[in-house]
Image (tube, rainbow, N blue to C red; front, top):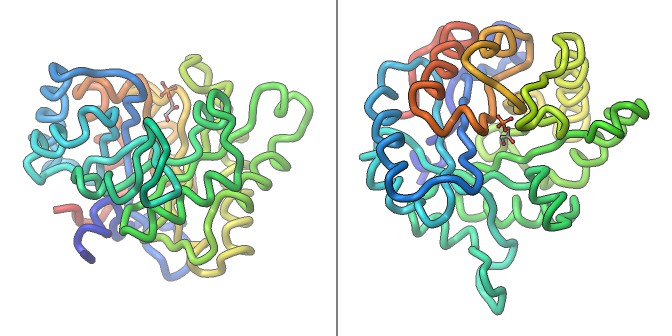
Amino acid sequence: MAARRTGVKGSCSRPDAAKGGEMRALIAGNWKMHGTGQALEEVRKVADAAAAIDCDLLLCPPATLLHRAVEASGGRLPIGAQDCHWERSGAFTGDISAEMLVDAGARAVIVGHSERRLYHAESDQQVEAKARAAQAVGLVTIICVGESEAERAAGQEMAVVGRQLSGSIPEGSSAQTCVVAYEPVWAIGSGRTPTREEILAMHGFIRTSLGRRLGGAGQAMRILYGGSVKPANAAQILGLPDVAGALVGGASLKADEFLAIARAAGQEINHGKPTLR
Ligand code: 13P
């Protein structure tokens, strides 16, 4: 079980990582509602290249592809899901429990993505319950936070993200069970990214909040950036202090683009040995 749990975490060696903690980059791909069986070829390509890449990788295809993606990965690439329910089972038509994801071979799950918060009206409380259910069955949780454009324009970005952090991350979360992804809503799928200073300020704020709330566990947790990460901007973003990887949407659909981002992460962040396999 320990090996399963540690599938998407690693020993990072980022010099500015939290005191005493080493943090290995994670590049996670969120396919959202994209992909049928043909897309499994992309999973195979990423899996084939994974051994030569110096960072942790994760692909999160839609639930219909989950099990087939696990098979296609041949054990060389962890596969994750995009959402789960907070209950173990029950009368929840169309929903999937964390235990079912584990049964399908998932090692991680994204919860609280802004598209879930927006289109499915998910509250912080629900996101926290989902994360708790997922952690209870050994899934690594990628918990997403991020402000809208209007919230940033109003100078509310820290207040919004602070609220999401305290409401969505379960008590007892650790660097082994939890990764935080900062995804400003206005940067998702838009081709726009925050400035260097904006990313630095927000990641610093998240690090401080996590540390205050969770102590050493919060200090050691990986904070990913997400929103229009592409091969062309990956090195610049991933080179920033306290950016321990990326949650990639559109550019994760093509193995070549995803791998180019992962290679940039390996160069910019890691100096350690791969620990995934
Ligand atoms: P894009 O990389 O397509 O902007 O999407 C980011 C995202 O929402 C990942 O979860």
